Length: 258
Image (cartoon, rainbow, N blue to C red; front, side):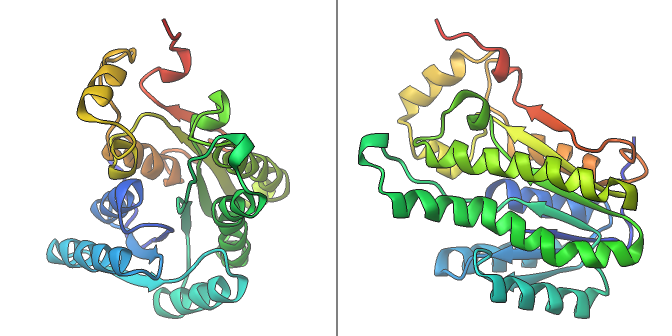
């Protein structure tokens, strides 16, 4: 099954590294024109620059947009700039996220709200700015990148699964409003994906032990998640899939701890 997104425009938030960066690569390979959002920091700026150089070297189009997606004015300005350059936004991947590691008794309310503001608030603001353009086009796709943490309460603190639960609730509300306009909103739930953020929480021995107990005896890759995102974004191949939460987790959701 070949995915053909020629000429369509995909916006990926938090796209400089990890799942976001791999999604940018996968969209480009499918022929999409890519708008990559990244946080205004030296690390993300450098990573986004390297990613854009890599993708452009393959002959595909990508432009970078530095913005804090938790700020309403910044997001509005970013989407205006994107649509001015590309002419539209056809597909959005709400991938940008932060986390905080803390037991509940020590978690500060301000830190809890900050995680929700970036993860769920960023998805809200980005979707709100892009949906009017999708309405003009008569179609669109929004992908919420959630987490198995919403199901099992993991993630390092209650803030993270709370934010992902808010994103999944947002998906359901948006489906009720916009399915009739041919705008599809779906969710992917990754679990145990080998990214720098995830690996930093474990020693090599701890990681190997953790993965060894998974049903498929391996971690997910960023390409595993990106492939699901791009498939769900294709209105020809997945045009009747709307309001779905897809667990891309190697059966992690069915795993019973020993």
